[in-house]
Image (cartoon, rainbow, N blue to C red; front, top):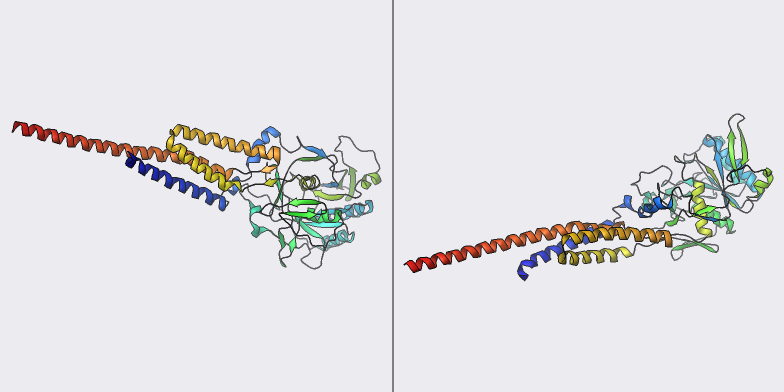
Length: 430
């Protein structure tokens, strides 16, 4: 009996090793990029989306100024110049001015940029090539360091305070990612920081020329740290609702072609305070202009995403990424299914596979919601599904071959016995 079962054991070993190799290969090469980080989104129907529900209300030294109206890129820069001038007089600590996507070589645009920089509190933000256009859902460009390059806004003509606007979240995902220090300037190769890092340096009065290098998987800025995952990306979630996100908005009057500022009606009713007091609320704050014409899609706006970034910094609430469990879990599940499938019926193997898939998704969502831990189970689900599908087929095929061999052996034995009986009967008659 042992000899007849040995080929089945060998087939189980070969197929288990093949499943293990395929699973490790997919994980090692990130072959399922389009499915990564999708598990945290699976609980969105329970939480609600957009991310305005069940969020922590907090205070932070960050305000945004929405810029409304259909305006050209040149006109937007003029609005930015005027807003930065008002904010400097109001005592704002620093102002992030995201620049339009296209390069602006016109004299009027260059003049506006020069005047913005003269106020000395502005930081120019260049749109990241990873987020400047709306990528297909299957395109995980953040994982490709070959795209972590950005062009100098003034083409290296002079030294200016500038950074990259890298904060990004995929469609219907609660995870926000940004790259604090990983970008490089296109021509000189100099490191380029995210605008949030530059703004925090200004906020904590750290000189612009002071060298800040990542240390032990984190970037220390003042008394706060930005954790860095192994891929150089910082992860956070939509978790904060500021008590005050903006106190005024900027708008271009199309009839008079003039810039107007209005109190923000976020409270549901107009403010009766004079504009001088409203401007004064920006004193000592990090401010970001939030123009919806910067990108091709409006939600979430850059102001809202950087609200989450600064909220994670000031409230020390970043996500931790754990992928080191993958090797252990892949190995464990392959061994478990090999033994279980060999010993039990195929129906139980399929049922176990289904139960483990559901359990892994539930655990992943629980870790994300309750402990700010990203455990992406997609590469662990691969061996579970493969084992639940392939090993029962291997067992059925092997048992079929064993049954066929047994039947063949019995038939041969039966023929041998019949032949012996025939000869014995022949000898008796003789």
